[in-house]
Amino acid sequence: MSVVLIVIILIGVFALLDFVRAVKGPTAVDRLVASSAISTKGMAVILLLAYVNDNMSYIDVALVLALCGFVGLLAMLRSLLPEDADILTKDLVDRPAQLVHFIGAEEEK
Amino acid sequence: MVIAYVFFFIGIFFFALTSLGLLRMPDAYSRLHAASLGDTFGFGFITLGLILLVPGVANIAKLLMVLGVVWVINPTTSHYVGKVALLRGNWVILGERYRSESDEQEVEANEPTSH
Image 1 (tube, helix red, strand yellow):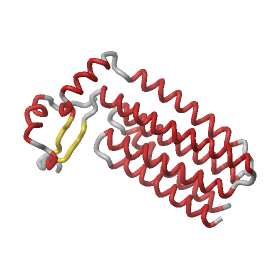
Image 2 (cartoon, chains in turn cyan, purple; image 1 turned 180 degrees about the vertical axis):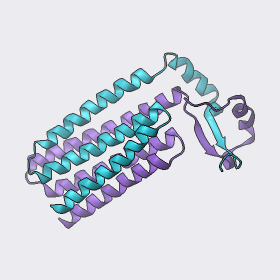
Image 3 (cartoon, rainbow over the protein chains, first blue to last red; image 1 turned 135 degrees about the vertical axis):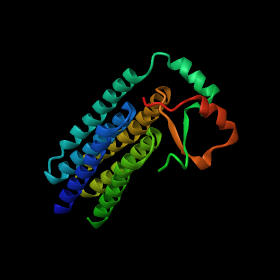
């Protein structure tokens, strides 16, 4: 039983490391990715707590968290999508290299 | 019991790879790759370890349902996050050794900006 508790504590530490990226992330997409990773780790913690507390109705909580997190993430992504998304898609198909930024040897220091 | 703990260890290993990739990768697409793949795989291993531990067939069925839902949802949202990142103009950061001659004028015409 104590092994599972150690597993839960380690997952919490890794969720804190993800939270660092969610705070620091330069773009909104980084923050969304980090919060999605924290959500998945939270589901794993809830499933492990179902075994520790010997209360199997926690599994339903994890299922509801997965579905609600999915819908919320989709809503935030729809609000982040720019209005001229179709024009941008066609432009990117025409010139796929326009987003690439190379790190030179002089910039790497 | 021991096999379940081994599965937990593998799951924690992939969670650790996820956090490391989120902290250390240079651009949003690499971070997305690390986060989505590592989280999906680690969650799968932790759920497989719990399937060996919990009593009853109904609980095992519910755990398999959660696992199936997460394994469908996580790649779907990762795909859409990547598309939104591309349309919002996140930069792809590559090393200097990947530069080819045909990329020169395209890249120099677009100055890197922060979004």
